[in-house]
Length: 181
Length: 430
Image (tube, rainbow over all chains, first blue to last red; front, side, top):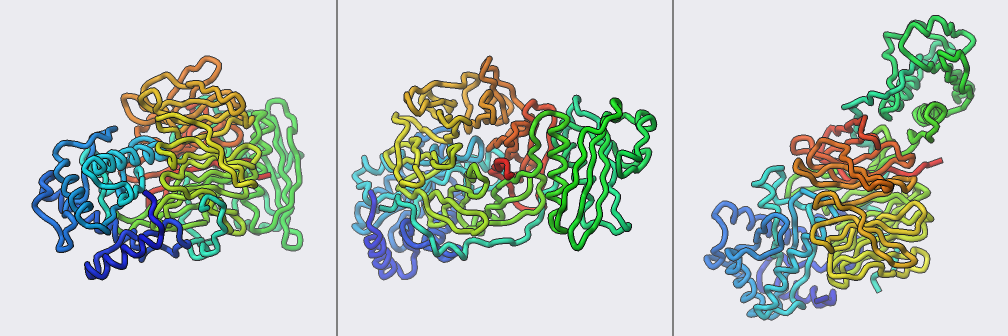
């Protein structure tokens, strides 16, 4: 599950070479302190995930089969959860299947599963719940044959909401796992 | 060996020292029905020069904020004596006030010499009289010291007005978030940003000597626990395992840090010995264990676990490793903190209306909600146990609130901008 930093780097280099500018996973975990972090790969990765989440909320959820980037990464990169639940909803299974297929057919591809909760409840407990959501996705991918060595998990809890409102609509958008490539 | 405490020399650019930020303000929302009336006369300044700070007003605000006192408004003062010899007790009996505070300030070679007295109006007795000296830029601190003396003399409880709070601010939207860790005086003044990042910062916790903060920062893209010396801004990374590195909590002796780590699968409670850099696993089961907090005697750790289904508070005895469930009211009790005397717990309790600050006394295990908001988080108890500061929501914005331990008095600390959250009340600083 843990990648050596150089391996991530290598993957990033290859990805950059092949994908002409698509963002990498940004393996910054054990590196030097970053200054402000604005230019880190992780940031652009999450911004990318966010824009696809926006797309998705505009077009409805579920299909996932209808699109992929030129690089083959499935377009739909966010799946949503019920309140207080880490159960994979059946309408998102096709999304996960697409990602499983992509990860398996691209030897160098890795994904960071970013787990999130809505703002209700305590922050550190939510951190743990968001990790549980990301791990539920990981287990699903494992069953589809994706090795955990291709999967990293970052649990954000309620710290990075996709929608800032304090209403059920916003909460529903925030209870999510984002695929960040 | 990334779990070693690495010196983080590259951190300097993240540490923005002494940047002045907008102060938090205080808005009393509910005064206690038991508040003691007290008259605080503006301090006389020798030579008529005005002070940069209105010391009597600072004292008055401190005492009112505690919920224990109800200061008389200035226009209700019937006279403005500056020392006890000038006080006509008979005259003061006409106002609804049990106590009177008078003071005078002289400047002596750039220093201020401040004399204050606390008088019992009914007993016609001087309870306190003290002379202190202060630099010009320490007059607020001197005022908080005076508040501490008055509070302790009348209530018998040590004052906590000279303490500080740490808190996190978050500004911007999804693509341009900025998180900052701040410290300020307990009344919201003298705000100072000590760390900023475009990745989340949370869970600040003061070392028992008040000189360091432990916190969680995602600045590398993954969560890690840091310990930062406030005066020097130097810091070390205490924990950066795979997975969650969360909820740091200092032991009362300052030598250890309890935390929640998910490196073995699900989050478990660990204790880091700071000097030896050794981690000891404390809990071991298939559930989430997080939000540890040390008992005041250092013998036990309170934590949140969902081993029974929903989150509840448990206590583990560090020598016997016996685990005891502490909360049974409702299906959500989390982020517990002991009162300084160890006799009660404060926590976030969910009921039909939402997430509220609650207290549970350990002699009868009765749980009482203290707030009537519905999205409260992160309760932190003042070192004298009289107040609890917490994060709450006003509209869509996060702000800080505080409530007295008995729930009778409360105040808000609105901020001019951004979301304010994750308050941590410092220990006594002196």
